[in-house]
Length: 112
Image 1 (tube, rainbow, N blue to C red):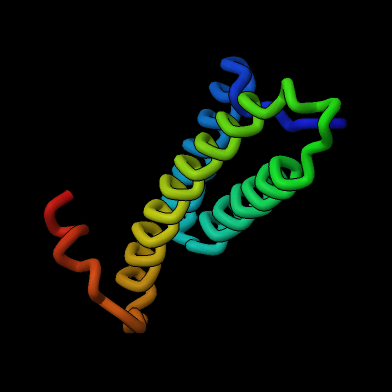
Image 2: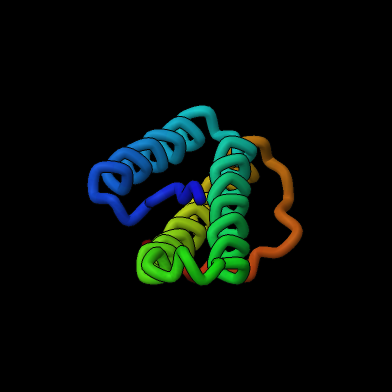
């Protein structure tokens, strides 16, 4: 059974670097679609890990702790990319002069 092991420190550092670079690219381009692609990628990885965890066979029970760590790390990455998407979307709406659908997080961005 193949597991994309995010709990490996080298993989974790590489994925964190790629995420930070994509967030920086999205900020420089002022395009929230780059942040959305990153968010959807981490959501797909999260769904893949949860599915593997739920359908884990008896002979692979030793991978239970690894999959649990991967799911926890996936949630952290989804949280990071979700807030970065909201931040970049706010930047994009201000630059393009569009009105955002919901400005309920304005108080949050003003404090940062």
